[in-house]
Image 1 (spheres, helix red, strand yellow):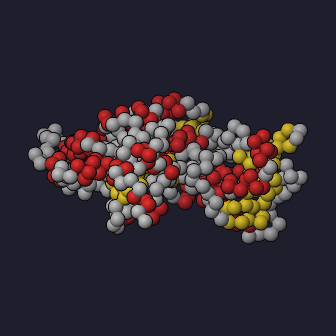
Image 2: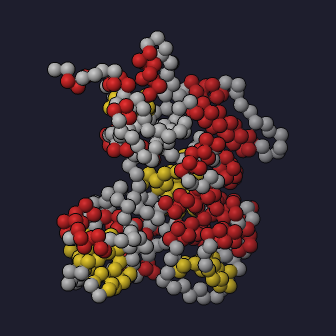
Image 3: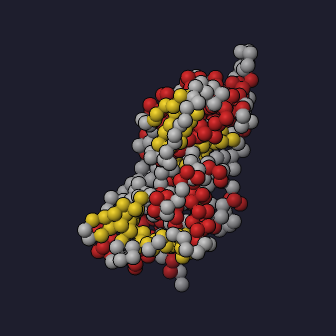
Length: 475
């Protein structure tokens, strides 16, 4: 995988030679705003005479379609339903059958997507900010966001937040970033507007507001900026603890251990947070991130991951555009990983200042020898030697076991064209072990795919196939 990539609608993977972690929206139902929305729509569909009716469930979500977040989210649960006199449709594949293509070109601009009709056959569109509009010849009418459009009481809607995995636990992104930067510096970095209410005063929260409460005061934020809300709302998961401390205490790192202890996370997690800040991005991954135009510090990378959660689409698991081919750089990667592991053990043991960084002389060698992708170089047969320099596998340290790779993940993806050849093994590892073409469209030694690919026979076929002319016509 690339150092940062989306792997599902609500999960972003961060993967370097240090290890792997995930930034995702909270998986708890009590915090899941989409799950609440689905429940409200389903409940309304079972009652007669309500605004929402004629609900047709069905998954028509297309992970490759870059549409508005709410459009794709609803497409995962519904094919269509009606809101009063409005008919809404969420299968983007049949838009051109329901709407005149010329009309689509006119109304689908600046990220807007057609999603239905009004009673008088005026088109309904949803824009990239998830606002619905009715478009007429004389102008357009704002129908509001999904909650306003469906006339739902947002006071009961949960506020979701993003969290990051550390070891086996998940820590809210806002709490983690505040640990690194301090609460005030985090708000300043995000550029978020707020108002402060002294303790024991009525907060008078509006429908689009939420509070982070401390002992001496409460900070009130708007939910308008979705990314900032995903970051800061994580403090609400520790509401009972934050009320025990003054706001200024959250400018210092000491208080955060008390927060984590309430979730059964010991000091080891705090030390791991310190390690991740300084060591998560290794030199090779930093070079790849620079090539991708992504942030090269851990804090900025986590914020970028939250921004990626603003869209619902994501690449397929086997999409080569979201992966890279690694070669002998994995030797250096093994050195880095084992060294970081030794430093982690040292930091966890060094409570009295007398411990040393301890590594076995054979630790790195053993790690390399245990790699399931290891193979002795074949130098007696030149063709076999060529094949071994072109072989690609999903297995090995940091990879996947062939027994866990399902049929869809073994498929030849459209982005493989010009990089992977037609060749694969004839065994249970089919699709998990493949071969590069004779001249793959790889732009640098880090194994990144070219943006503009050439598709000549040498870019598409393997060396073995090119050495066997007319092999497809033996009969």
